[in-house]
Image (cartoon, rainbow, N blue to C red; front, top):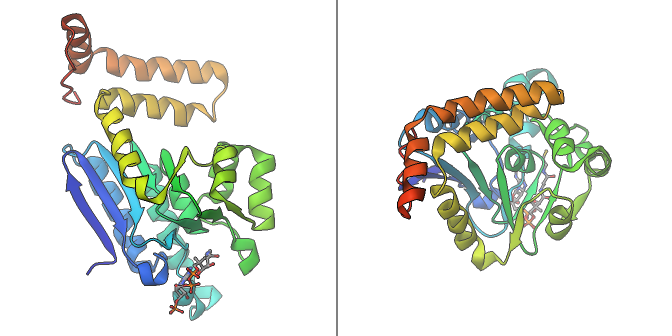
Length: 258
Ligand code: COA
């Protein structure tokens, strides 16, 4: 059985980290595969949404594979750090909507992976943390940059500088995860979000995602210009015509992503 599974259901690709006995820790092999898969799925016209989850009920992902790293001298860690940063970077660069179905706790690179997705749904009883400073390192796959953008600098420092593990309910309260559900409801919650997304024009979602993500680092004027450019892409799409026609005819739209 592969350490990384991918299953297509309709227009959604489900990626599963499949090392439950190692709490789905990110090995070098998994990182390389995940990085390549992210690029492939982004380019695949038949895929509109991507879900990332973990196998088992103990953890979503315990972060970098610490056992694998233990035997690697500091001078030779470059490829390991590059592989995890590339994998998570490639997930973050996916233009289509991505959902992290956090089937359990997420630490270190596991939380960095979750933060690279657009939406995070957690389960009751789990926790999250960027624990790297407790291991003599620091977050190196986007954590120090994505977390403050999500929750603000003060709360990000609380997690990053103290290496704190916080309950998922607090992660929800500070806006780090979008929702928290009972473990048995996770699949249904993800499906409900996929159904919502299926009612949205794919090109519109991609352009809106671009405007939100890139706009964060711009001045307001630059951001408004970016928004205008993104809007124009939707303006000349056939899905815009379909959206207006479906509204006028009182029927659900059939979007083609064009
Ligand atoms: N890398 C490699 N193996 C890991 C791992 C990691 N990051 N996290 C857990 N494992 C392994 C354990 O070594 C153990 O292996 P073993 O059965 O061969 O002894 C197995 O997964 C189960 O771990 P265990 O701690 O017994 O399970 P648990 O359910 O009680 O706790 C965690 C799970 C994730 C809370 C705990 O393992 C943990 O805190 N891991 C480290 C998380 C972390 O700080 N990650 C940041 C990395 S930068």
